Image (cartoon, rainbow, N blue to C red; front, top):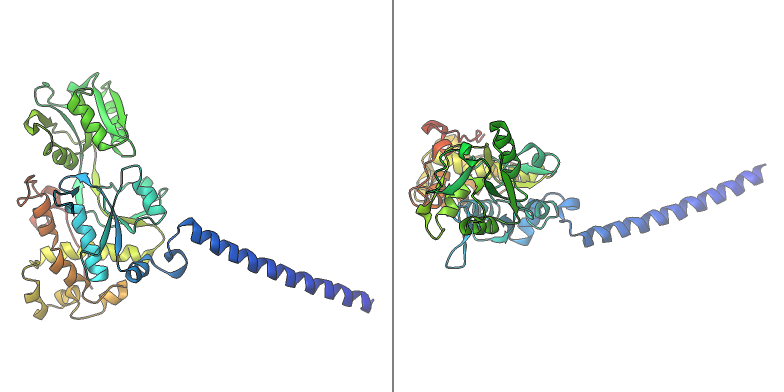
Length: 361
C-alpha cells in the first residue's frame, strides 16, 4: 500500500512539473503574440502616459480637412482648434508643444485608431455619446466645443427650414452621429427625404457642390468651416434649426485612468487660466502670485502635477506655449480667424456660457 502511494506521489509530482513547464511556455507565447498584435506597452507596464514620456512624443489623431478645427495649411503644418489642444497635451506631458505626431483620421478610422493604440489621444471634432463611451470603449475628456448639427442648402433654393426639405436628397458622412440624428428629426417632423451616404466629408461636399444632392448635414461648426473654402461661399446658407446636441472633445482609450486624468486636467488648465486672466503673454507675471490656487495651477506650490503623473509646471507650460482657452478659440474660430464665430455656449460660465473648470486643489 505504501509502495503504491509512493508511486502515485512520484507520478503526480512529475505531472505537476510538466504542467508548470507548459504554463511557462504558453505565457511566453502570449507575450510574443501581444507584441505582434500592436498593443501599446501601457497594456502591461502601466499607463500610456509613461510610454509617451519614454518615446518623447504624443501621437494625436486629428482631422486634416476641416478649417478652423484640423487642417493642413499652405505651409504644410497642421493647424486648428483641435490641433492646438493636441499641442497643449504635448506641452503638459513633455514640456514641448511641438512634440506631436499628427495622424489624420477619417470618421470611420478614428475609433479603431484609439482602440489599437495607433494614436494616444483622439482630438478630432468627435461627439461624446453613450455608445462611444461604453461599447466603443472611449473615455472622453471635458467638452471643448459645444456644437449642434445643422443643414446647408443653396442660398437660392427657397428653403428656409427643414420643413422645406420634403423629398430632398440629403448627404451625410458614414461613421458619424449625423445620419441617425437626421433620421430622428425628420421622422419626428414627418418629413420624407432620401439620405445619401458618403465615405468622407470631401465626397459629401463635392456631391453637394455639383448639385447631385439637394443639401448636406454635419455639425454646424463643420458647415461653417467648409463653407469658407467653397468656390462661392455666399451661394450657400445654413438653416437655423439645430438637429442635435454635439458636445465635442478629446478622447482616450478606456481603462487607463492615469492617462484619462491627465487629459482632463490639462484641458481644464486652459479654461481655468482664461477665468483668471492668465494668458500666454502674461503668465510669467503670475509666477509670483500669492493666490494659492494660481500657485497650484502653475506648479509653484503643491504636487498636483505629481498626482497626475505630469511635470509640476504642466499648467504653466500649456499656457505659455499654447495659451488659455480663449486664446485658442479666438485665433482658430473667433475674432482672430476668418470665421468670427461667437462664443455662445463656449463662453465661460461667468460670461453667459457653460465652460467651467473643476477646482485645482
